[in-house]
Image 1 (spheres, one colour):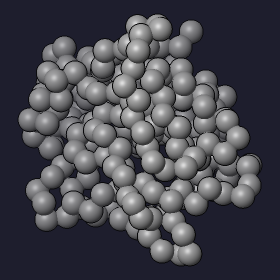
Image 2 (spheres, rainbow, N blue to C red):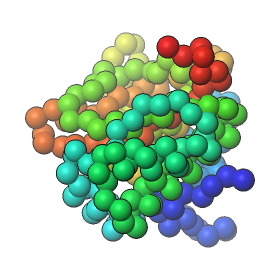
Image 3 (cartoon, rainbow, N blue to C red):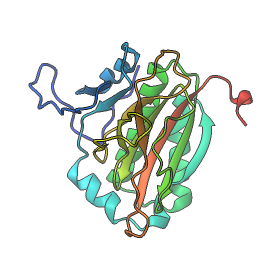
Image 4 (cartoon, rainbow, N blue to C red):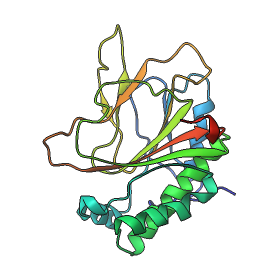
Amino acid sequence: MTQTPTLSALPRAGARQTTLVSFIPGVEIAQLPEELAAIHHPGAAAVLWQRQPLGRFQRWIDALPPEQLPRARIILRPGAVREAVTRIADATGLPACNERTLLIDDIAALADMFGQVMRAPFLRLRLDVVTTNACRKFHVDAVTARLVCTYRGTGTQYGVAQNGADPDPVLTVPTGAPILLRGTKWPETPRSGLLHRSPPIEGSGETRLLLVLDPITDPEDEV
């Protein structure tokens, strides 16, 4: 059974929702977590789950010293994510509290859902703490698909490129909102032209914390 993210309040079934319009062709907007499966729709270059983190969680994670933010790069089964992230949080000194539990539960739930959507027996999980202009060029990842969720700081930027130029307009994924992006190994062609990048933050004093999930079929094939 798919775990339910706890980082934000989920809408009631049948409740009216305010739709976030992406203005970007090929980017579908999900109101519910299970709608991330729309990545399999023909022509869906990405799915953005519209959600806002609980205020108390955001205040907590924004106030943490950067050295306490969890960092990781591991390959594991989706069901092992909660235990692994708990150990990582212990290692970085992330203080035990309700908000830490929300973070760990949310990462575990997103991993569980992403694993099911992609039918992936294993995942590559990254928790990156970013203070520079990492991946500042617009690009498409060399994966089948990738889930990115920025828990702290400015979210991923995206847009459709034309004639080799950078995207215009450029939109920014809201903090705490997961986005599922097709990569170069997705079998559907032609590609949509949707590109993304990490926001340029060098020199701003901003610290970002982002979760990145990639599907893995066989860990022995990974370098």
